[in-house]
Image 1 (cartoon, chains in turn green, purple):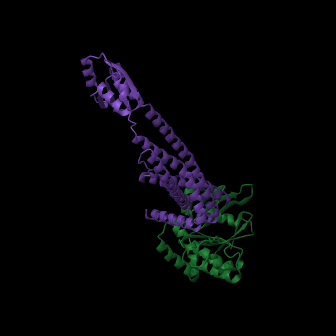
Image 2: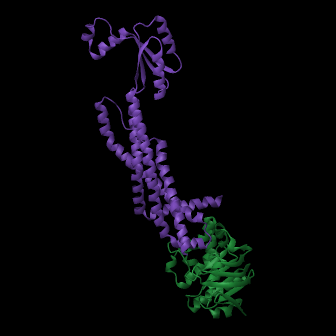
Image 3: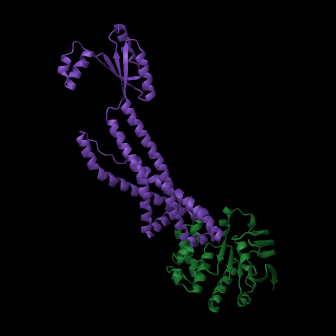
Length: 219
Length: 302
């Protein structure tokens, strides 16, 4: 599903975040990215979502060469990728359910159908009773769950999560990881960047250790 | 197609909600636009009314043909035949006795004319050509003047021509002013939309991350710009109606003093459509320019 071959990302100013990465992630895999901060975890995720473009090598996602994709094709690529951010990136000018339907609005779904799907996914993350609330009134863990709900509502085949439990205490973090395990079970491909070693050992899955922009596989 | 319509509807609804959410800012923009539109539209209206006023007067140019005293009967017949041709709208023969009688009656000169030894006036034709353009008039007057038996021609159209030229100049001024204010509209709209785009940076960035196309992001702003232009047009119609209402009375009074029933005509429906539609178009254009530029900046910063 995702294939890196000799992918390099050098930011303007010369900092090389990834150096010659070779990596294949199969469909339905659960992959953890670990490593010290600045090792290139976020950059790797951004490349997969085409938020950043590689400066060298070839990266294909679902058979498409992401580096060569014209700008106007990017939105359609991103609609098949669910993104979970450490800082949630929720919109506080609208309530919980409006946040969740945004991807469906963008994709042009009918409103009634969108709301039905949004309620289903809110139910899955345990926020159905908060659908009318403003996200600012939610706790950190709830905000993260809302972000996950928004990432999942369009039923993407691939979910990318950047430090999804980074700001959460242990109980919330375990909840979130349990949720991810559930998605993995139903066939979603997951790539999760995290520091949370406990979660990794609890969940199994492949672990990729990044160090100064290079990948070192770990059992 | 249905998704497209849904997007349009959602964008329009979003734009309306945004306007309703900031009524004061929206009102200020509408007033600024309304004033900008009112100037060319008002001038247009004034010229339109002036043109109508001039059209009500006998502005139809006439050529007077004076027949030579020694013209033969054959020459007179030939001339009359020439004046029945297709390029002449109307030709009226005024023989010198009738002319003298009219002169005496109209100008109260009976005493003077009675004292004259003979009739000094010539026989004449008053000719209205079909083509009233200046070139055609001059050509026709020259042609008729060259006919045998014609002593003199007099082209009686100067004042009408001058008025028409002044109105033409005024109309050109209206277009010039309209073009300038169209640019002002684009600028006002672009500025208002720019503020909106910057206020919604987060939403734009998030939308991009979850697969929004540039068109999707741009759409509500375009509707917002068009709506602001439309409301600006409404405001300008309000301004024009107000000014018209204030002027109606004094104009009627002035016209009354000249024995005329002239009154100010308001905008006609197609002009309404133009005053509402063109600002909407320019508002849209300003929004497009502004949002495209701002989108580039948002792109660069994430």
